[in-house]
Length: 466
Picture 1 (spheres, helix red, strand yellow):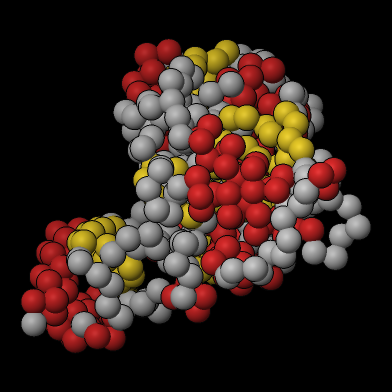
Picture 2 (picture 1 turned 180 degrees about the vertical axis):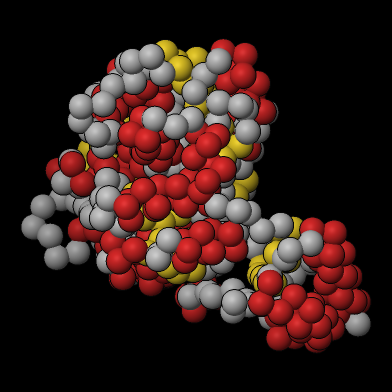
């Protein structure tokens, strides 16, 4: 088993100042998440989207339920219209809804205003191309350079050339219909009891509707956003509410979404969490059986459990790993012609159905599997894979240093890797959004890897102290 001690990162990541692994993110109304930056971004996106086009660029904007969404949405729309662009406002809708609507509305770009699972005081901006896929690093770098280069965007529009904004009144309905159409025809959820937690976020209206319209009996949680309660003690970050209600209501499945609903944590009928790795394993094995898994391959990140890799290999399948971030998973899927991928954290990408992670589509695929096999979710999860013990330690430093510049950590890592041999692995990487070192170990004995993880943290601190 090949061990990994360093992350795979694309080179533009090191020279971009605004964009991280998933767009721009930070405390709302503080740099970089200010109205001024947002307006400049709207102008730059419109410039790039309209290049070579004979029509005024059309840009779809969706957001989650954060109070700061109004401020940022208005600023971005102002930037777009100042460049002659047409804004299509969708209001609070999931991130994957923006990806879908960008394509279905024949728009030139889509913008999501959301900080995903972060607290309400944060916000963020993600950009989709006209094909519904997140922009690659190189495109984000160009947008960032245009935002900061005086005169790069040309003259401001005046008179009749100024753009306009309009609201897409049925944005939610269009997305609900799209999601429902990914569920196998001929199957209904009659008799299925579902608990769904929308995290007081972007899916607070659409999530219950999807399952209700397919016939399920739905218990809804996290559907009363007030601008400041998104992700607070609810949703994918806190699946305990769903776990308790699944048992209490006798539901067959629980679904906990994050703030922008591109990620889902599944709960089985016994109230046990089924993470993204297990979902990918169970779906992949069924897809291989049905001849539907492209090249018998799943794409996941370096964080996915070793048990997933072993389970796929035992069935004749293969796992390809990427850097952390669903965008990198999708890029590898598109380049290799694969149709299933995701992250342990609950990003599930079924590329035959959607161009990005979609919590609702992922949940429906799991329910379809339950109905086709006539097996409870707990049994499907138990048979899907045997998890290898995994330990994660995070430590924050004043600033980032290249891993090669941490000699004590490198020496200790080599020692631990030698001790693990082929029975485990070590992964050390920097967070994509902050100077936080993430140290992950997998191995057959949890006590041993937990001890080693703390020793690696101590080694990293020693390097910073020297």
